[in-house]
Length: 221
Image (cartoon, rainbow, N blue to C red; front, side):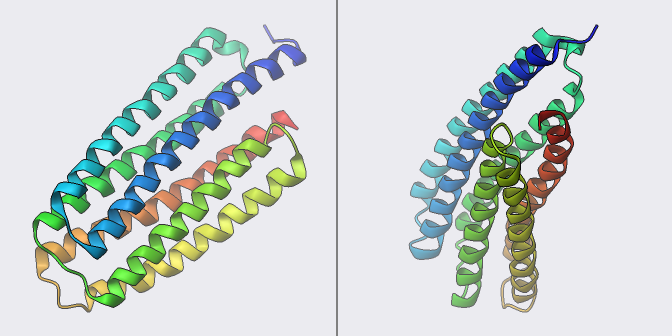
């Protein structure tokens, strides 16, 4: 059985509305990580960082609740939605960003507990990386908003997401090399590298989401 075109569009629009809310919550969650990065760089207050981490855990649960609502919505429609697998992939990839954000926050707290202070160059590059990842996520969200409205804007935001992801890659490579050639001890060096790798992985996931959105756009426009 195939849904009438107008009914399928109605279901798609409803699911996209939930997904747009999901990405909004995850970007808000990521912004808390940026606050953590600033706090870590400027004052290294462990109690404050732990408070940020608790906020992130609450935000993560809220985003996951939205994810569960999307799954319920798709289950209600079932196989009647022809691109259901693409929607499932989209929701799963967005949820991966939330998991990675939480992982960054957890490691930041533990890096602070090691009393690790980064030099000025590393601090500046770390903040630059964090900001560029946010720019990538913002372009992704704009693409998600445009997919139900305007094909030209959607395609533009897709390109912008990919362009920002490439900028993240460039910053990440320079930062990773700077970490490797720094005077950090082995444990904090490895943990710092893991943090910056996870930040870069958030942008990589955004690029994978772009590919999924392209597939979905074929049935939307």
